[in-house]
Image (cartoon, rainbow over all chains, first blue to last red; front, side, top):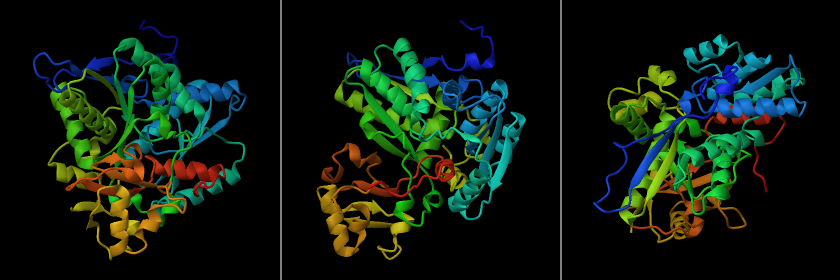
Length: 321
Length: 110
C-alpha cells in the first residue's frame, strides 16, 4: 500500500534492495553470499531516526508524559532533531534543540525550516560547555519534556516493532544484520527481535572511529555508554575508521547507485567483512545492513571527492555518523 | 612478536607522548602486562581492580571489539593491530547534554 492519511503514517516499511555488484563473488557451486541494503533514507525526513522519534512521541503521549502544546527539548545536532521537528510539528508540540554552535549552517537551517528553535552551546570548551549549558536550560525550564533517546526503551522498541519484522518478512533467509552503533537503539531493538525469530543469526555493530579530537576527554571516567546498550544482543562489534567509511560510501554510489551518508559506508564496511568471511568458509549468507540516511547533508564536508586522505582531513574532528 | 598498539590522547602521558607503541604477547592480557613493564601504570588505567576491562575503555584487535573475542583472553598474532579508545557514543554531545539535563551522572557504574 502506498497511500497514507498523513506523513507520519508513511514512516517505516522501507525497501530492502539487493546489491548484486557489491556482493562478493563465490566459487562455482558454492552457496550464495548476498548483501541487502535497507533504505532508511526513504523515511519522511530522510533518515532512520524517524522511526524512533515517532515511537518515542507516541508512547510519551500514551503514558501522559506529553500533552498538547508541550515543549520537547532535545540536545542533538543530528538526524534525531530533524525527525523530532517533523513529528512535533504534525503532532502540535514545540521543539527546542540544543546544539554546539560549530554545527554546519545548513543543519541549523534545516531544523528551523521544520519549525524547531535552536539554543547554541559554545563551541569552545567542547562537551563540558554543552553539559553546563544543558544543565542551565533544564533548571530554567523544569516543565520541558526530554525524550532522552540514549536511555529511552521506546527508541529500541520502535525497531523491535517495525524494523525487525520488516526485515524478516522481506528476507526470511537472513543470516546477518549489520547496523551502526550510536544510541544503540537500532541494534538493540532489531537485534532482539531477530534473535528471537532466527536461530543463530549474527547481530553486528559498526561503530564509527572518529578523528582524535572527538575523543578529547580529560579522563577515562568521562566516557559514555548509552543506557540502552546491552552487549549480549550483539555477536560482533567493529570499529570503522574514517577512510574505510568514506571509501565504502563512495563505492555505494559508484557501484550500486546508492547515495548515502558516511555512517552507512561504515556499516557496509563491516557487512563486507562478514560477507567475505562467509565466502572463505563456504557458508551461505544473506547479510542485511542499514542505509541510515542519504548523503545530502554531508556534501559540504567535501569528503565525497578528492583522495581518501583529503576526505579524512575534511572530516577530522567531526561527528560524521 | 611485535604488535602495534594505538594509544588515545588521554593515555599518552604514560607513553611519553607516543601515539603508537609496540608490544608483545599471545593474549591481550599478556600484551597489557608487557606494555605495563615499559609504560608503568598503563595497565591500571584499562583494567579495573576486579580484573575486567574498564567500562569506558574499548580495545580493538584489527578493528574488532575484544569483548566479543574473549576480552582479556583474546588471542593475538604477530602483526596484529590493537587500538585503545575511550568509550564515546556516536553523538556524544547529545548524550552528555541529555544526561546532564536529567541530572544523571556519566561517572562509571560500579
